[in-house]
Image 1: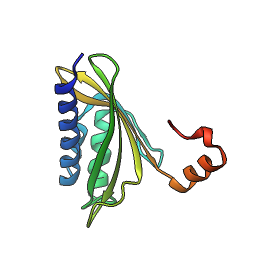
Image 2: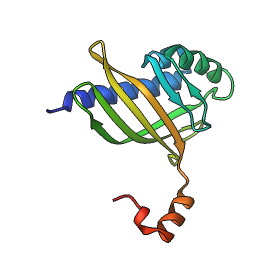
Image 3: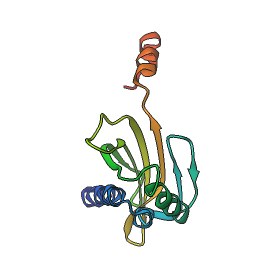
Length: 144
């Protein structure tokens, strides 16, 4: 199946995600997720619903994340049927200029009411030195 329009729709949701983050709008940010979404931060915090994501981000945007911007670069979109896609990318937050994107992010998208929403998100810090050491001492562990 040709997923060209689905790919464009998913990228549009990610653009909206960035735009709502950059505005500091937790409610609009949370609205891009399913009601029962799972959201894991790089610190390991696990939020378990759209409302939890929206509420917590409203608090974060008015404190620790106030004035931050979001950078996102999609590296892979893989469809698992017509209504589910896994998206992998790099991302990070910044205040003055976009940084080297230090985090690896995985999104699970589902078709929800005709449109696409995020059902799960996982964010982890990319540790390039640890990765390089692993690949040097165990080359078979390097991804193809």
